[in-house]
Image (cartoon, rainbow over all chains, first blue to last red; front, side, top):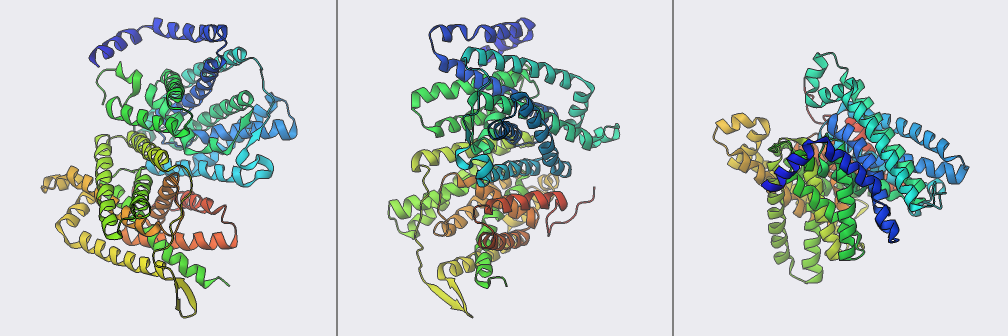
Length: 318
Length: 285
């Protein structure tokens, strides 16, 4: 453990590590596509998409300290809006994405309103409830949403897996840069102030209510975009995206990689994505295995490295 | 005209919900952590009872203490782990969700995702003033009330109860008075699990069971506790009764498919309008 700690501390200190990681991501599809293992690229694409959501959650849950247990809610709202508009109405993907973002924006305000009245664990359950309501509604109004089956046969944006990979990687990079900009701006400073101590932030002239709501909206908009990207890649969406397991998966990614880092969310998404898929090969196609792994990963990380993998380099975990 | 039979059944059912929720309330009141794995501890108790009474055909008098014991140990273990990270709400959340996911999927692995039914051990109906009620429901409700009385007595007069109240009121002062706060908090987790396992035993023949229902029961519990006010035993019973009635009436008059939404809406609306609950005291900032 100590040696691993040292190695991480040295390697992550330099920017070269980031460049290495980035170039690794860029050349990643070459080997699998050469051997025709599209499945490996598929896992990476899913990891890319969920990394965007995990980053969005990190802005809200990590930097602003809001216990938002429903990143899957915004993700699903964006995804469903795009899916419904493209299959039922036949709009252009770009238009559906924009409307999806607007819907998610309004959804974020609905989600954020109770958040202004409560905090901490109450908020966790409120957000979770909102997500569950969305899931039940998606099942109930089967005329529009397709019920339990969900919506299928949504036209794909790109057919080629490798192209899809670079497309999602591009999106990931764009959102990583945008998120880093947000977090390092004055807005991000306000977010951090809110998460540290609300009363103190208020006395320093920060409008806590406003910044909490902004944080929810930023998270929601990014997650909704990722939802649309997901739908146009998978060409399928079902009510289960709203389930707690999706949110737990997303939060696990952030927690494993390290909260309040953004890059950690990307690393976490890849670790969670590949470890669950790798174990799926070992254990066979039991869906519960994947979820149990989320649970084990989350438990172990929380008990032994509460700040995640990137948190290890910052020295002793607190 | 509201169907009286449904109303009374709702009250009987609500008592059980209240019993389940009181454990959740206890954990929050004393331990100051929200244990999101509570619903799954409850489910473990339900499945233990199922395994022992239906699969192994053990006597109830053997099965119940065993279930109680297992659940209490599980509750103590979960509470012990949560205590380790109790300083950060976010980590408590992560950890308890992680534990809940593990429990859920272990149950899923062993029992499968199918719904299982258990026939009522005491069949038959009784007639009270023209309202026909299931005997089993009446008996469980009476037992629930008894347990409530016992719980209130324990909390009001024993040393353990006094320590529980002391810790929930002021941790530092309790330390200074010589109470082992950590031990009391972990014990609170154990007592809560005992309440959960009693409620689980009662509910088992009433509802079909499925490993995923831990989250539903967690939300039931949370909705009740939020409605009644955190840390109030009487409020929890009342919250349970109100939600039990609403659930059955909603299922009867509107739609049982959307029944779940009622609970979620209750939580969202109550928290948005009156965060301290119906009976909770309003805190002055």
